[in-house]
Amino acid sequence: MRIDHRLECGTGLATLVDQVAEGREPEDPRHQAACSHCQATLAQLDRIWGEVREVAREEVTPPYSVVATVIDRIRRGLLSLPAALDFPLEQVVPELVRHALLDAERGTTRIADAVVVDVVRAAAHRVPHARLLGGRDGRLGRSAGWLSRDGIAVEVAHGSVGIALRLGIDYGTSVPAIAAAMRAAVIAEVEALTGLRVTRVDIRVEDVFLDGAE
Amino acid sequence: MVLRTSDRHLIEAARAGDLLAFETLARRHETRVYRVALRMLRTPVEAEDATQDVLLQAWQGLPGFRGDSSFPTWLYRLTTNRCLNILRTSHPSNPLPEHLLGGETADEQVEHSLRLEAFKRAVMGLTPEQRAPFVLREFEGLSYQEIADVLSTTVSAVKSRIHRARVELVSALAPWR
Image (cartoon, rainbow over all chains, first blue to last red; front, top):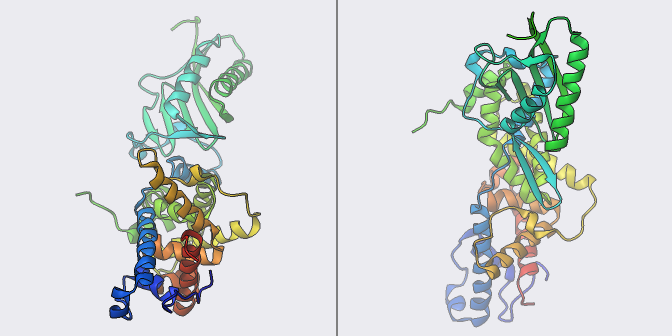
């Protein structure tokens, strides 16, 4: 149909479209009220504009991860090292839940960062000669994108996760070897169980156990 | 009532490098960006990517944001530019998978939701140049003047593009000829 299409009564379709879309008064109210062509067309247009308004009212919400990823990308550009365990407490925002997002063919899967923490914890417990340092020094709560608890900090993004760990290791064992074993175990477990790509595992060794026990 | 820091204060803080201020600002306005992107592009995933691009661009462009237009207008401009670029560089896809268009229709009458999907497909059938002003006008409720600012064109050009878009849409949806 062309923009200058006219109804059988001679009224321009464009005129009626504008009338309905803009909520204008009819140009020729007497003709319109009596004309069956105009009335039928107006009924169609009213229906279509009902749909316009309905779509306009539809609530669409972007996934939480959208802004989180943006902030993450900005921060990676700003800071050379993720200092996950060093954020000042005033930046901690405990109520926010962040999710990693996996796109599938028919839907999306969201994984809360707390789930990733649990997976990391389970993997870390199986590595000998090392222990996570939680407790009073392991920061709890969230800081600017990171969830930090029990000596584990994770930061989820769209399909990936960054991880930081605070560890104590048994005296007499090799730090590089333990760190490598820990890193490999955490990456394997997280990638296998969640499907997320682990972008990095930063490890900080902050205690040593002299007799292999506390 | 929730106490809100004004956009202006957040913008100033964000310009000075305060990332939390920017995050607040981004969360406040992301839905606007996402909504336009969703109506301009084909899938929610595309809309999410575009929203991220726009917000990153906003962060980078904040120092140059002089406040001549309102912050939402500026964001709308970044968003439509981004979407138009995406549409120009990507190949037109096959008919849109209607279930990907967003919105909850599960509880609605089937016939009604089908009509709504047909309507959304018809919007996607508009040329990008018609779709942008149409979306800003009909879905975002902007005035012709605001749309002209967003699209850097004249009010009369906006009016004529929206008018054509409406007639296109009607002819795609109406069974009469």
